[in-house]
Length: 137
Image (cartoon, rainbow, N blue to C red):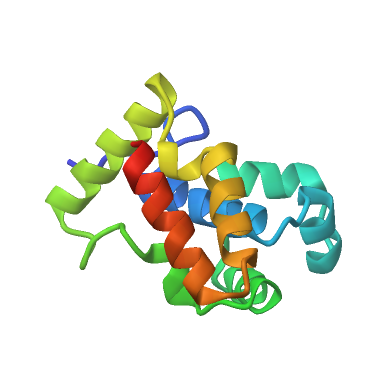
C-alpha cells in the first residue's frame, strides 16, 4: 500500500528539502521575504516550503539553488543515497524528532555560530577558536 502524504502528514523528502532551504537561507542571513521577492512569490509560500507543507517544484528548486549559490544536490544531502524504505523511515524519524525536540544543526544558535566562525578570515585563528571550543566542551 502506498502511503499518502498531506499538509498534516508531509512527505519526509519535502520536510528534508525544506529544512535545507531554511538552513542555507539562515547561513546567508537572508530573510524569507528576501528569498520570496527573488522568487516572485510570497514569504508565506517560502514558509510552507521550509515546513514541508508544500512541495518545491523542480523549476522552483533550481531557482532557489541559483539564488542561494548551491547545487540542487545540496538540498538532498544527508537524506540518503536513494529513496529506499530505510531512508524514508530515517527521514520520518528525523521529522518526528524535530517536532518533539528540535535538531541542533538547524537551530539559530548553531547557524549563527557557523556563520561567525567562517567570518574569521585568518585560518590559523579559526583553528585556534575551534581548539578553544573543543577544550570548553
